[in-house]
Image (cartoon, rainbow over all chains, first blue to last red; front, top):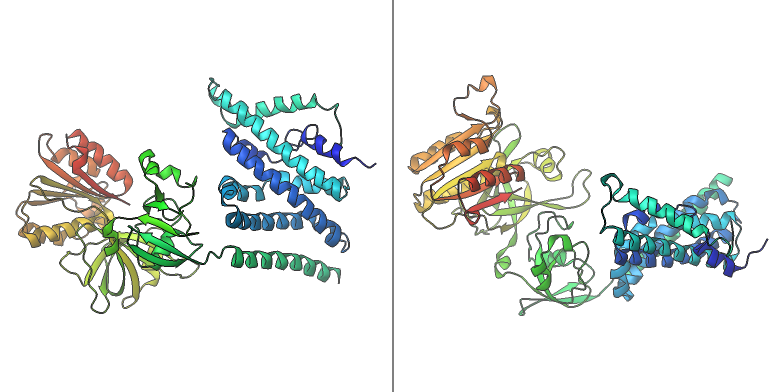
Length: 195
Length: 364
């Protein structure tokens, strides 16, 4: 069944959000969501990297791994491609866009090991997406991840001013909030469904 | 056959990406020649793309840094007036509000990407790199060595008793990168040809493993310096020296200075060790006592062994200091040792009414 790329784009933001339905990319999601500013910085970096690496990985998979019948090596190859791309991106930004480099700079190395990036590339393979579908899925996945972390950071900034039981401070509370957010997003499942 | 194809395809992908990154690094991170203007009048040309600390070091300007540029000591502060780019999150923990306002940055974090204008204290220009020969190696205790470095050629070094130098530890064994480590000078400041350092072995330490296991008498070693504002102040107050382990070094240099310049102030040196096997330089201290009538040396063991036959002071150095110091004296204190020892000693000295600005220390 062919799914319209526009449907994939919106579904991966709202109904199949990579954090809230698959719980991928949790480590940086929990660690960098203390304040809005840095969470938005990381969010931008993820949108950028996820969109581009998904396309790159699509091309590598379709034109190198499939013809050579090496699909089983995709985990390793995808990781290498992501790592190399992030390195390259860091250098390009440092040289040509210093402003953006200082906003995203420290987050870029963090993203190399973000499992949401690898997760999106692997889902793309499992669901047998075409090029355009992969592009929509990568971009939507990134925007969805950014939306989730910015929303969590906003909630955490508000909650920090109230009294929370000691044992629940930090990640404990963040996970409860994430759970409630995930349930809230289920309310949107009437829009579209791709899973 | 398929195994070969698999490996070669994976290798090809790896090689392609590595080559791409190497090329990118070569062309993208080449910033050409940049100008560094120091204090408005000195201009240096350096290759861009490196950190300010290293670029200055190449021009023989040494900014003090204890961690060797990893951004973990916060010592290499310079004022960057122009061209430093925005403040990085890696710097903010080491800078106060006022420092951020007057454009202070960490030289090891700022990259030279364009022409840059900085301000540094004038005295840093007298800090230089020296080439020296190891002329003496002596065991002081089971884990502390005295090494003597003689400057090559007709070089001389001007330092003030209490200051330190940074030894350059070259690449050796499994260690792939040069590192710098700071050690206080133990010899008198009148000897401008040779300096003594007292070094305690740190288990698995990069620098001390090199010094204890690789360095030999006759070898050449590089160091830069002198650094630090730990030196004897000019006053008539009674002096309290407190040191532990290899912290004796700067105190010894200060005592030499007192003898040579005839400074006959009342002085007490509290030297803290664990047991008899950690004590050293006891004879030297006795000879200092003969030349300085108002000098007292009080070694203290915190945990003497029965075979030490110890008749002197026992207990932690802070307890011994507490017993010997009155609360109404006019004191000035010089401390050198581990942060734990120094912080505990400062507490005791403060409780004796010694104001903070008269307590000087060198933590390592």
